[in-house]
Each structure stands twice: as structure tokens, then as C-alpha cells.
Length: 214
Ligand code: AMP
Image 1: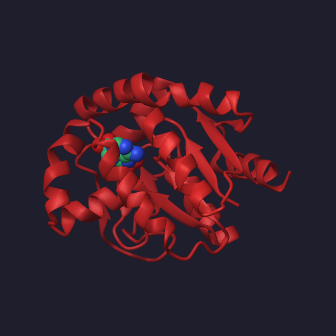
Image 2: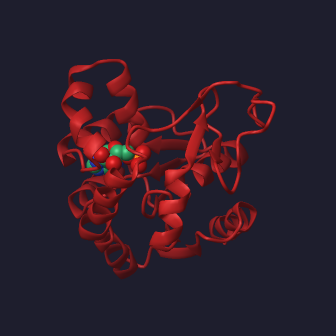
């Protein structure tokens, strides 16, 4: 089973993807994570995309499609979760072609609905565990007082360079201009399902599970 998690930055795509990796042995393909990895390992491509990412813009379709193409060659286990990809109509078309080449299907596109005010609060206070990626938030889920990650016990926490108000404004604008048309695109294809991204993490998990089990 292959699915897309669609939604603006801070909608909770990464958190839900991590759950699906654990519960269904799916493989999370986050283009954001791949690009951050390319940056931190100092590859040529990483250097090219760094400034665009910091400002909150979108990296070229060619680069991200190339990253996804490579990953589709690997093990698929319980299927792929596309997290943060596609973000443009050109990427969506490319994904359809790549899946068709591999005789794979796209089984659901899950839109995570949230409002802008909630996104700003979620993102401005977001941090993640440096070891396992567990997500924390200064107001809704602070890092435990003993300084240890609840999931793995790790003691290092990171904040993303682009999780600031200025970059978030650009990221939201990019989402509405270039990514939100995908909602209509997948609706027209009969593949769109929506969940309330503002519900509790457990409720969102349950809603997604019900869609995948249907
Ligand atoms: P994310 O972790 O998904 O929020 O992505 C972080 C940043 O990586 C975005 O703000 C973009 O600069 C870049 N990025 C991630 N995925 C894509 C994509 N599919 N297309 C273009 N740029 C992307």
C-alpha cells in the first residue's frame, strides 16, 4: 500500500508517518528529511538547496523527483508513505509515472486539515529528538523535565533552521500557491481522503487507520 500525507507545514505529517512506520512497517519517504541529510553531509546538491530551504522556498521539481526515483528502487516493505512529496502538480504527475513504471498503485491521499493560527503555534515551538526524531512542542508537549526523550531516552534536541516566523510565512504561501491545488487534483482522481489534523494525535492515528483498513 502506497499513500501520500498531504498538508501544510506543521500539520503533523511527519508524526503520523512515524507511527505508520512502526505499526505497518511502511517506509517513510520525506523529501524534507532527504534534503536536510544532503545538506548536513555537504553534498553538492545539499549546498545548492540550502539557501532555498532556509528561506522557505521550494527546491526544484527535478531535484526532488530525482530523490524519490532513487528511493523507489529500494525495499518497499509495507509500502511507501510520501511525506512532503508531491508539493507541485509536476511532482504529482511525475509520481504517477514513477509508480506506473513499477506497476505500483497509489492507494490513498490523506489530507491533514489544520488552520493557519494552529500551524504557527506548532511550528514556532517545535523541536525533535536528535536520536529518534520524536517531536516535541514548547506548549503542547514540552521536552520532559529530566531532559530525556520519552521515546528513546536521548538527551539532544534539535530545532530546524527554517522553523521561524519569517520562513514559515514563505512556506505557507508556497503551500497555498503550489501545493494546495493537489487537493483538487487528487479529489478529481477519486483518491482524496481528509482527516482533522487538529484532533489529538491518537484520534488522527485512528482516523488514518480507518481509512487504510477500509
Ligand atoms: P519539510 O521537512 O517537508 O517541511 O521540507 C523542508 C523544506 O525542504 C521545504 O520548505 C522545501 O524547501 C524543501 N522541500 C521538501 N520537500 C520538497 C518538495 N517535495 N518539493 C520542493 N521542495 C521541498
